[in-house]
Amino acid sequence: MERTGIFEKLNEVFRDIFDDETITVGEETTAADIEGWDSLTHINLLATIEDEFDIKFEMKDIVKMKNVGEMADLIEDQLK
Image 1 (cartoon, rainbow, N blue to C red):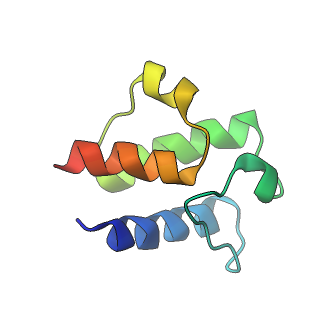
Image 2 (image 1 turned 90 degrees about the vertical axis):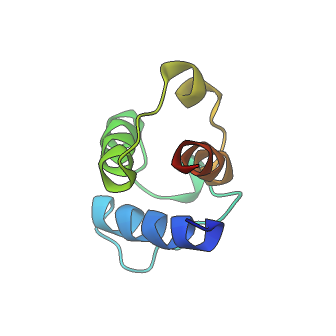
C-alpha cells in the first residue's frame, strides 16, 4: 500500500474515532491538533488502526511515536 493510501485509511479512522468528518491528518499532526485526543482515545485509536491495517504495534514503537507521520512510517514498515 502506498503512503497516500495509508493516509486515506488513517483519515477514515480518525474521522470515525473522533466523530468529526472535517478531520484531515497529515505528517505533522499530533494529539495537540485534534480536540478530544487524550490517552483513552489514543488507546482506542491505536486498536482501531491495528484492526484496520491488520498489524500490531509494539509498545517500544508506540512510546516513540511523536506524530501521525511516524505512525504512518510504522504502518508502512509492517505492510511490507
